[in-house]
Image (cartoon, each protein chain N blue to C red):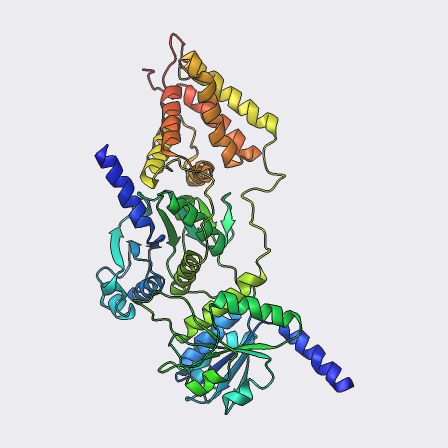
Length: 261
Length: 261
């Protein structure tokens, strides 16, 4: 019983790192490296290789990973896909081809949303990717619970292995961070208070009146509203209000040696 | 009137193809090719190159594009970023670095949601990507309305050019296949195209130069960027740009019977 509890705990801890990436029969070491790099860009660290053609460890992979294989991605080797997914409760198979197999077909978005729910309850999830030339075979696909298909232009679909991994990683990271707030253009403390804004508007409008721009009088109120709306929308900081007042003061001054019209 | 209608129709038709991708000072032709390939995977076809180092057309780009440059991606060349965005009403700058410029920072998800809303009302949208080595410079970023930052693992961020394009394309395709666009804040009013905005900026800066406001010279570039940022953020309509130009012209003119200082 104690053993079971510990396994459960380990699983929950591992769940925070997102889905495992399982490359089945990858060919070029370089492509394994770029896949590892794509993983770590989005915080994925569990990489499993099934029958890597060029062997492991692999110098090309390490070079292409830009340090990802040293800095966080953990690699494990397996002879069979069955062994690589043995500890996973849910497996998705990435493939674009139509299959006779009757399985749900999901976008990365849906698959990741589902897997995040599963991970939250302590399940382990993985995504199978096939080799560069022919992708996953039917036996591999049959081990998956669902098919994951990246939606692409049907007339030009040329996603490579690292790109497919990148998009799955992006979906994971995007959904994990979804509650992230938009960074406002300016923080609350920087923004100009209302009286400073109105001081600028009145300064500008005084000058525009004296230059005959806000004319005729019956149109003046609408013109003033439209001009103020431009600057309101920009969400000005105090510094910017000062800059704008400086601009107005500068423009109405006759320039050095310049003759007024 | 017929001319106006046709322009509007063309714009709406073009809007269906998603954001333009603008590569500023890309270095390797191969990377332009993989970016084009990533675009077409998600149905994006409007590629613009500003000062491509290796020239155009480029055999490496064609090879790396896997046919995308022959099968649908249209390439146009520009000498300046200003010219490349001249017809765009909304521009996003992809950058991960902190900037002093005060602009909203958005995820691809939010930027694409916003841009789809704008496109639905006939506006044209583009995304700026910097060169491989150093990304966009501050002058390029200052031409954008907002910053687009891909959320990545802060301890391992190594997205390359084609991957950044891929993720923006994926977001576009994902959202296109998913749901209704967000309703844009600027409703049905026509946003000003980039060349109109730049025309206003240059007009204002000319007058500020002649009035000695953009002084000393070493501070001029930062002052110009900060002033442009105010107006970029406001998301100006064409009518508002005309109003602002009228304001500048009015202020520099000596008022009726008023003595210059």
